[in-house]
Length: 382
Image (cartoon, rainbow, N blue to C red):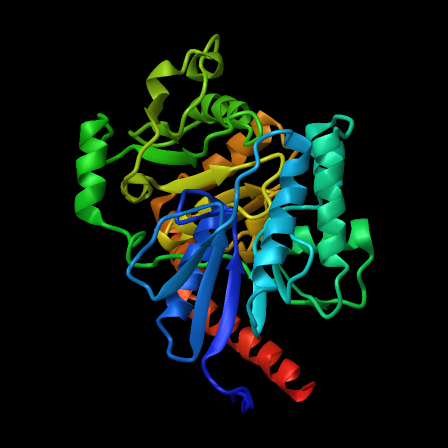
């Protein structure tokens, strides 16, 4: 049962994102939700960005200057210009997907910057890093802010860094376009034929740009191990969609014929359709949209415990969650566990059921309710 709302419509909403309508996890999140909310008569939606691509949705765009030099001033300059522009309007809700000084809602797409630098990048903080962390802390500490981390891993890191027990929390995982990533037998046949994949072959899929962070070498070595024991007539094949130094991942392993590098593809949904399971044992991914895409394509998924999307994976049912420190031999055994087509089908169906609960339309309804509650509260305070 939905709550009654006191606010007179339309509710005026500011959405802040450095780049709107471009490729990227945060960018996709902001775009998909803003486009759906903008077409509702209850909302008057404005986007504040350094660069943007306009669509047919009724959105008002506001250009934020892009300060390139000196680099350490960039996060401060963005936050300052956003703050200055937003204050010239009377917004009911300010929703930011980037670090700014003040917002009613923060969608938190990454772990705290100083933890990222310390634990992932493993380097000392530069002036840019310090200014980024300063803006971040100032924004998260603002009064009455609603935090929407994209995964439990992000929320845990926020609590570790800032100890914000007094803040409102609501983990909001990204959504998915179910129609785009629906399983397609005709596409499966075309892609597999184009790359010389036989019907009886089992295809493991990797999608990503940063081969090192996403541990492609571990996947390649596991593929080599699993092929020594692979049952049946077909082969275990690894399909790698993305860009990187592929030579270093096949040398001295003798499995060149079992790995296919496609490069960057705009039709990535076709490669999900052509595959049998998905694997991404990343060292760090705050969510990992590709995991949800694979699940929407009815694929069992294998992720590390450092991938935020583990939140939506039921270990042993819709996929497998492995230690980030797993050996190639251990991952090979997980691959072998998926050698049965019948088992993959059952796990794929469970993965698809999970994906259905993450449809972007459902996410937009959830976010619209948050906007209305914030607007109500402000109205009551007048």
